[in-house]
Amino acid sequence: MERMQKLLIFYIGSEKMREVAIIGIGITKFGELWDKSFRHLIAEAGSKAILDSGIGGTDIDAMYIGSMSSGRFIGQEHVGALVADASGFSHIHIPATRTEGACASGGLAVREGYLSILSGINDVVVIGGIEKMNDVGGGSATETLATAADQEWEAFFGATFPALYAMIANRHMHEYGTTKENLAQVAVKNHANGAKNPYAQYQREITIEQAMNASPVAYPLGLLDCSPVTDGAAAIVMCAADKAKKYTDKIIKIIGSGQGSDTLPLHGRRDICTLDATVHAAKMAYKQGNIKPSDIDLAEVHDCFTIAEICAIEDLGFVKKGEGGKAVEEKITTLNGTLPVNTSGGLKSKGHPVGATGVAQVVEIVKQLRGEAEKRQIKDPKIGLAHNVGGSGATSVVHIMEVE
Amino acid sequence: MKSNVARFWREIPHRYNLIGNKCESCKRVFFPPREACPYCRRKSIGKMKEYKLNGTGKIVTYSIIHVGPEAFEEQIPYPVAIVELDEGPRVTAQIVDCDLDDVKIGMKVESTFRRIQEDGYTGAIYYGYKFKPMRTK
Image (cartoon, rainbow over all chains, first blue to last red; front, top):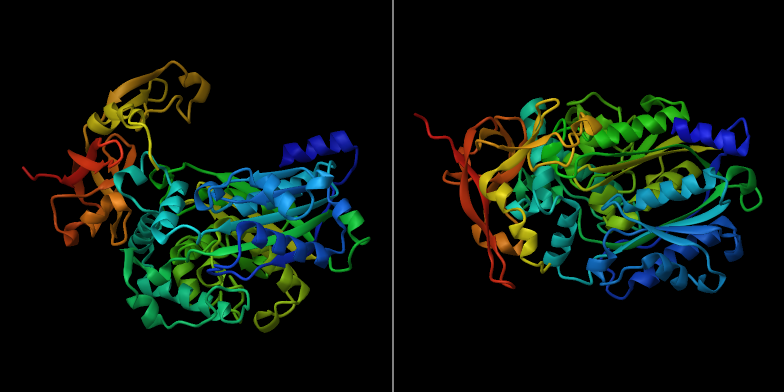
């Protein structure tokens, strides 16, 4: 990032890095959407975001689309062009690029769009995220998700994707005394938030007992520790901040962006319980925004499994390593807590259409910062953070947004 | 996904015999073998030497899988663990030859050559390592 800043200053000759604003958001209902196709979903999310922003089609300089595995889920690659076409922009030939980083594909699209504006090449970009997961059977969807893990050295030997997070959970319990009840508390909280989100897949509350007694998937994780298979799309419109006023008064600035990578298999990591890619991405974003974790008013974190939320609040620096379980128990992360986490319901309850997730997290943060989160609105948030992870932690993307 | 059998036989030395490699510069051992040492990088190019791991280690963490992929369905429930080998590298593998309740973090284990899965499409049977509790002498 520092090197990039220097390069930008060199090339643009400006004293200050360009600022980027989010001026439009759009999201579809998340769930099992049998009557909606891939192209219908992304066009719906995209047109909502464009209408919300006030831009016109010819203002768009580029599009970035996050999709993890359209090839396996709907047998279709080349979805950058497909999305431009489905959105009605094929005849104006807008550059459209797809990003892939497993479940972090959407977050990568956000970051690539952001960097393209920072570079000075683009002024207005539309970013979409999409996954249509229910056109294949459940078993096939699970196998596709497992491609986020190391096929040769994890999946080949019988490890499933939930088993990787289960091994993180088991080690976290062993080292820090985190309990199965702590995991259940994450699920209960996120379902309570999701019950207040009309776009969520599961708009219903669950109890601790239900979460703890759910059928086992991969010990110590049960069914209610896992995010579901979901269809859905989300989109945002981003604009160079100095040009944003032209289109709208609802301006949310991106003040920090970070990305990190790590070994593809979980067993290669420095520490099983720490996602170093997240630590790296967060440091990068905090440094750019010149803020500390305690400045964050709310966060959407990547809770693909309940243990992932506990690790995330530690790795993002909100609590010390090992104290994530305790923080959940003390209700710090509930809607009325000091740091609300996953007000949307998170991946657990809102649903997890993998490629859409990173974009949908930004949509939720923008809604909260604008004061448009309805029944789940928290009081006067100023700074929000979105955290998107690929695989068991080999890719991580963090974005920090602030009300202008 | 249907794959050509070459994808599997090219890994035979590693999966059958735990052949990894060692960086002659920093003496770290890697499994599976790496093209370059991530710590020494350019200094390690051309200095990565084949190294056979002895197959003993301990369980760092584990899970018991209750919902598994088709190829492993008949084995459910089965334990999978991350094993730290004595030479340093960690691997992911099944734990066998013990009750589910016996699997513990810190347990000493040794590798054993087993059938991992078979491919109904090519008819090929894939073998590799699993781990079992270390025999006490």
